[in-house]
Image (cartoon, rainbow, N blue to C red; front, side, top):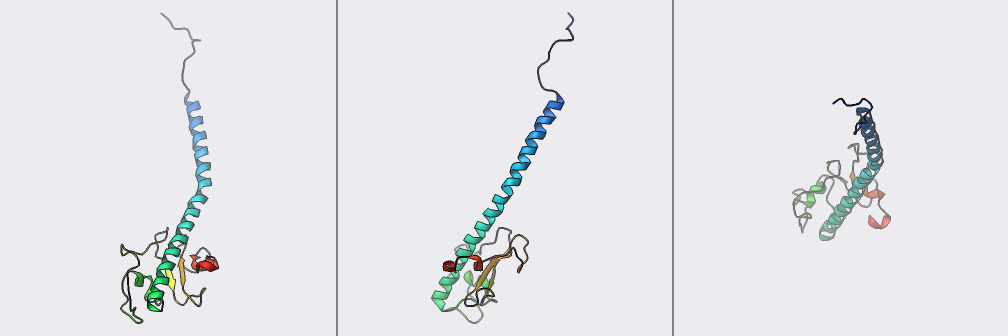
Length: 149
């Protein structure tokens, strides 16, 4: 038996499938582009939380010893007792795991005492997405509200 030529066949043509996949890809691209800002915002929030935790640890260090670690001793003074002067009278590890937090770009946080931005205290900062200190994208404790310093 011969099938007539005018019989309709079910399914999609290759052109229709390519069109649908292209539209889905376009929509995904727009969604990912819009979400990029949310990811950056999340990293900034994480930096602020880390800076707050480090600030608290440094203030505890100061309360116990009467001084902050020097710039040379750095944040490592929070996880290992300094061996250079001034040496703390009462030293306790600030972080149980013996590791300092790293910023979202996997860099160490910067520390300076006395600070350039906080001359009566310390500067604590992340070099930001460009990973270069002293550039406009740095995030530091000088950006915090005055009551958080």
